[in-house]
Image: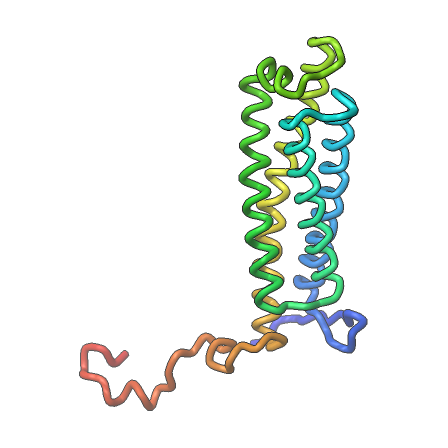
Length: 192
């Protein structure tokens, strides 16, 4: 019995299934939201102090790395490239930024006063705490979206390997390790 398959052209001459098409669109949407959230965190950090302290500089640098990862994810997904080195680099960068974003959000919510002191803010402490908690909330959103992006990137890579657009061998694509003829030489308990 066969199922209904929906093929959608991806513009590059190939065809995508409906689920791969929707996964690709959700992946792009999550990366665009990451871009907006990270750039908003940069502006919130700069609103605390225009010329940031060392701690503020590293916080802004973390958000710049997040933006870079989101841009590279969008570019790789839009170009349809599934080369192993770019996929691996994107996964490593996304995991690292997710871990650091989660750590920063925990620090912001548990030690707001100390964190605000390290940023050497020019604004009042009450206003600075509110701005910092807004940035912490966006960091939580970024943390969650990074893991969603990782999962979606895995599924996109899986779809590409199943379709054979990567350098996977036919045995990897069909999930067969050995042919049945090879199993006939095995002892009886291992033959299924």
